[in-house]
Length: 322
Image (cartoon, rainbow, N blue to C red):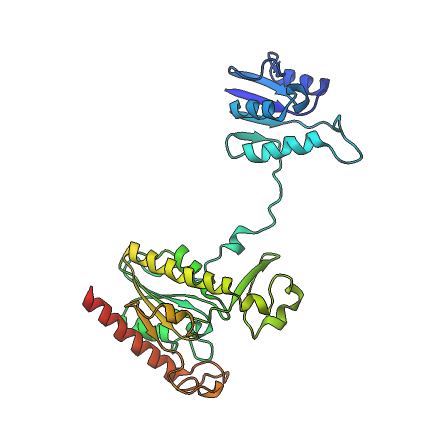
């Protein structure tokens, strides 16, 4: 086993290492290349170059960080040798045992960034519903939203990968990272493409044209032009086709139901699993659906019953063809 103590030039490092192993050896630019098992100590200054320093660390089974009270090249509060040594240790901690080193603080909380809003409900075949507030059931009860009605018709459990104001890209990510298996049924209530999300201070925010003013402090990240950009349309489109490919590869049955947008839908009309359910009634805001939900804006229970019925018919057609 090769153990390397990393620090600064000076007697302190030699004294420390020899207290642990009387046979510890200094690594310099003369003997850094071919280390044999044992205990060593060195610094960037001892081996002369960063390339030599990395060669030493690549050979180590264990690295012990032993910084001085004050670095020999310290100017005010800055030391290049400290910065470079810690940069290397931050990388080599993935390859070998590193002791007495506190890695750089990661600003983003992984659990917050990678949060899945629901989980698998059964080891057997189940239903997954993805989408925005329409699929989440804003304006109706949990038991009268179309996803639950459909699950009741199919007599299988259901998980909801849904969030109000969420985007196509967000929903696609939820689908692609969830525990969806062969034989499962995925129903994606596709929303408007002109939506996006941003992640600041470990909080994910969804942005639509209606909520843009609420996020005015972040207009440097997102603005009206962003929501209307070809790039966002492109991201939405490729996200949909990533999900289509994913479901095909794992043999999950997918239904894509357009609930709020008819632009991306133009590129989906040739998909056998596509269903247009938007603007089937009036065009005015209060007449877009068969009825309105409790908030006077989202579709009501009669509309959700209609959605569930149409999606059920589409599933039967797909199953008959498979």
